[in-house]
Length: 339
View 1 (cartoon, rainbow, N blue to C red):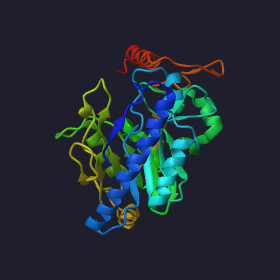
View 2 (view 1 turned 180 degrees about the vertical axis):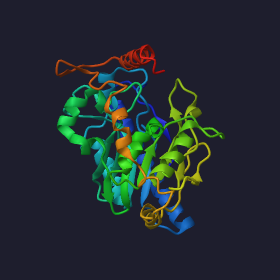
View 3 (view 1 turned 60 degrees about the horizontal axis):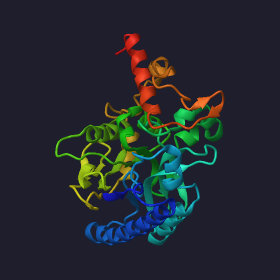
View 4 (view 1 turned 60 degrees about the vertical axis):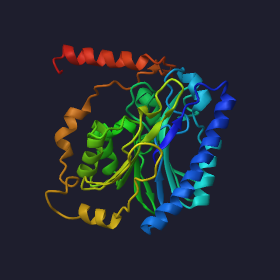
């Protein structure tokens, strides 16, 4: 579903932000309910999965500090926002996939961008924290501590559900093939991709990447873009259009134009996907991987881990921290003659 993200930055206080977030969740649930009726009457298939855009309920934290945004907009695990989403999923009898900023009691004052899936029982059955971000904290920035707490299964989760094995890819991470490949090798069949991006009638980087990730992993990609961002300082349609469902052979099954819409809907044939994965042939790219060939290349790190851990303690970053880290990486690669 291609829906408008609503910022919380301009609101007078944190309480007003929380009130707006819950009201927005209820509004979206009403849109999902109406969409369910339309899709089922139009196509004849039961609607079982809805994918919502990136940071739909808060927009992005562009002009507010990390700790302040954590207090104002980040969801608590098991908190009222997830409870409200779970209640709606249960009432509607479907899976709701979305994306939000999320607090973690192990890392007070920080937040992680989290893609989630809520099942028809109202439970969060998938929680994936974005691993590659430009201006936000990721698990990799506190890697040693994060791994100790959650392990690899918590970093690359795949939910085995009644509608297939689902994994999440957040926003621009669709451009990083290693993330999708790792999830596919853990069994993922359907990638839910919550995004907020510039749409275009031409092929964008993300549009190309969605097709590539589908082809190389023999997986469906269900991608939801925002229908603009409701922010007093941004033109509304700055991130709008091109929500899409991509078949595992790379062709687009459905794609939306601009504005709030539910027109990107399609049937996913998991039985056919599973047959394709089990069939020997040149197109079975997933089974033809020779991963040990690349082990040495991937043994090191370009972007350093633990950039927010000093002598075992997690520190609070300012927004410019992430840009400084990237500049240092570029300088190091340049001196080594690698770029």
